[in-house]
Length: 214
Length: 224
Image (tube, rainbow over all chains, first blue to last red; front, side, top):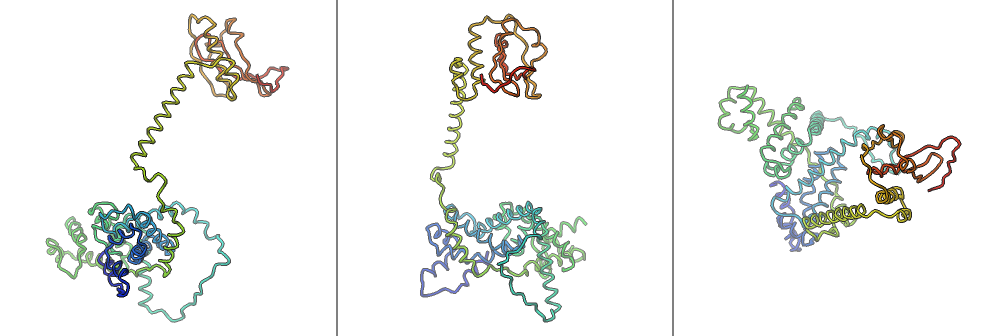
């Protein structure tokens, strides 16, 4: 949370436009109150503050960039749609992460159901009008450290994907997003003890899978 | 080993960093247990590895796409038509509607049972005349014919080939009044649909039966 707030406050404050200064300096609760009153600029500020952490969180949960971006947009749409019903009982970050987590878990469940259908994807025809990105191979020899680092990151990403979704959500929120145990308990709607237990279990599973990199 | 488990849980609860001081109670154990020291180092390395994962950023067009979707999907954010009514009031209204409908249906069924239609009314009905006709004829016969001294056993139905079969006790020779009590409701190529009235005489319900035409018997599609 502190990381989120510090990134929000580091935004350069324009002196000429007092309204923007107000929005920039406002707390999340003040912004959502402004959204409730129909202030579009306050909503844009919320999007600006949370687009990066929410997209990163969804990507770590789903390992699919396009879908993560789509669901991040959907998260903000839901925040906007339900702004009138928002109550400032939790941090706003808890609220928005809860929406994102629910979307991610629904997506993972849908994927599980679609798994059989995806067997046919190798036969799917690409759109002829679709532009193929120009991918020029880098001819320079890869340095060992880069190679090792890339491989290690890929292995971590793969290992996270193998975790059961309830462990994955708790672990990503804590170790990747840096939320407190209290906030994670609010996001997942479980007790703090359960959060600790799930994170501990997830780390134990990852430790077994990533033993070679530790 | 049990001690190791307890210590490891303590270390994980505080996300112990081997560079810092160990939590109270674990210090002595860590000093003498190499496995737990290795475990603590591995867990610290794992947390660092996870925190070092590159941050994935949304595309530059993210804000514009959100705005676009807000405009395009505005219908999703409109208040539903009945949103001004509180949910408990809506639920209570639904319960009242269902209960009233059930009572209305029940009372109309009771009225129909108490005052069955006449034969003429039943024949004038546009659909399903058989049941109404049966009820009407049954009511008329119950008025005109004397009651039976002993009731017959209940009829059993068999679903085989769609036929309603009389039980063995019912297949005895019927009295004269019963023998003539068959009304042909419908006659077609596949047979005819008849109603046996004698059962009504004995206080049981009329039975709809299907008879197949005998050889040489005509089977037109005339409706009775």
